Length: 141
Image (tube, rainbow, N blue to C red; front, side, top):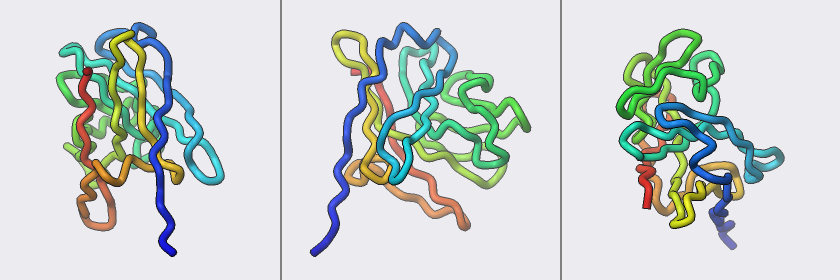
């Protein structure tokens, strides 16, 4: 029998709690045996993206980074990442990204599977050296 991983949607609260052009950290259940810590970004364009909260380089707090366009710059060592794809724009390590949407009521909803990973049916895993990047697109609905 094959184990099936089911994605769970988590309501994180109103989008208004994240100022435009910034990110915030959220913790959701989903990782076995622990929770998943995410960074959710509210871009100036209105788009919303969710990624892992810690920079893969040295665990810098990505939600505290500088956000411009669809790029975040880690505040510790200036590593750059594309928030739409998770791709590293400097350095080698990419980010895990998560499907995120905004409800009609303005609530943030993110999908995380029971292993703390992005929804496997919508994610495209891309091998980059020894690092994996999950490419997803978070757009407001």
